[in-house]
Structures are given as C-alpha cells and as structure tokens.
Length: 296
Image (cartoon, rainbow, N blue to C red; front, side, top):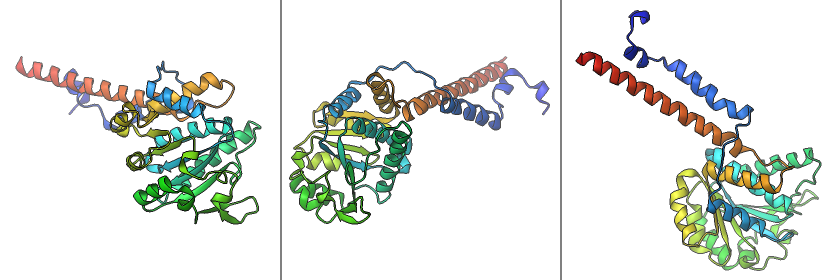
C-alpha cells in the first residue's frame, strides 16, 4: 500500500510502533535530566508522616522495617531515601530489620551507602554502622518475628549480630543504637517501608507505639483504611507520596539535597500518561473518521 495515498483515518491508525516507542522513550527520559516542577499539594497523610518523623527526639532510636526489594525500587527506594535523609539530619539512630525477603537487607544497605556518600560529598558526617545504625537482619517467619518483637524485643534480637567498628560481629543489643532499648515501647516509632503485606502483619501485632507506613501506589487504598482509623499515624503512598515528602523537605532544608526520585519519576509518570492519552485519542479519532468514510 502506497503511504502517500492513505486517507487521514488510515494514517492515524497506522502510526508505526517504533515511532510510538521513540516518543515514549524521549518523553519519559526528559525529567531524568531536566527538572520539571509540578505544582503539588501534599496530602494530609504525607504531611502527618513527615511531621511524626520530625517529632522524633534527637539521639533516640527508631525501628525500621525495610521490607522492599528492587522489585518496587521505583517507589520504595525514593521513600527510603527521603526517610533516611530526615533521620540523619535530625541525628536519630535507627535499627533496620526485615521480614519480607532475604534480598531486602541488601537493598536497605545500598540506600544507606548512597545517602552516606551524598553526605560525604556535602562535607557532612556519614552515619556510622553500629554507632548510628544497625542491621538487625532478616527474619524468615514474619508473623512469629513480629509477635516476638512486640512481646520481648531484646529476646527477639538476642541472636542477631552486626559489624562493629573493629570489624568483628557483636550482638546488636550491645550497640549504642539498641543498648538502652528494653521493650518495644522504648522506640518512639516503628516505620515500615514495604512493597508487600508485611505492614498488615505489623499493624495486627504491634499497637503499643506509633506506626508510620510508606507503601507502593497499588497498596495505598488498602493501607489508607488503617490511616483513617488512626492505627497508622502517617502514610506515604507511591510516587505522589515520595514527591510530597521531598517538597516538604525542600521547605525545611532548602540548602540540602531533597528532590530526588519523586522529582524525577513523578513528572515521568505524568508524561507517560500524556503519551498514552494522546495515543488513545489519535487511535479513536482514526476509527471515527474511518467509520464516517465507510458510511458515506
């Protein structure tokens, strides 16, 4: 078929796939290299999450359930980066454990290393393993581990070890991070960053301290029930939540790195949706014109 003899309807319905892929690639790549500011009204759930983290006293220790892997890195890594930046700026210690996946501890350590490199580049003191944070590790039985943490956190973490500055493994409960923790209520907050249902397990079994959630976009509607009921004090959901926290941080820490995954990927999502909508409109317009022509 001679493309020069095609009708407008036929042209609209015969756009080459390669052209569409190139348009999508270019559109979604732009925000990765150029900042595209998007007007943003932070959700109340994100604001509550941010304010609860800001209320944690300097020098105290929060418990983090880092239950995400590279499978949800697009959203979870952004949430985790923002959280760690806030904690480190407030000089809050943290202990990290996971019940989701054996790969989750490494994903957590990779982000901690990234933020520490960022701090070094900004001539800030890096957060030291053992002194400022500890990796409690992976618990293969989520329900049992969470019950144990709720009833006796020292017993739950008793056999867990991490590296001290001398390069040797020592029980995590001997670290400066956890040595003053006697019961789970001694943590000012449990912060869960997850891409799975581990948040449900924690909410069902731990109710004696504030719980904050950072979840993927598809988990948002389900987790919002716990937020509106007051069982969760703050909720960050998907890329919108990441962008919310980053914009809130930008107001309080204007001279530091705040805009990261949210500022890059949130506009990317919008541009991808624009390409999708325009493509659907073009396809439907082509079908409409073709139908009108056949009826004529």
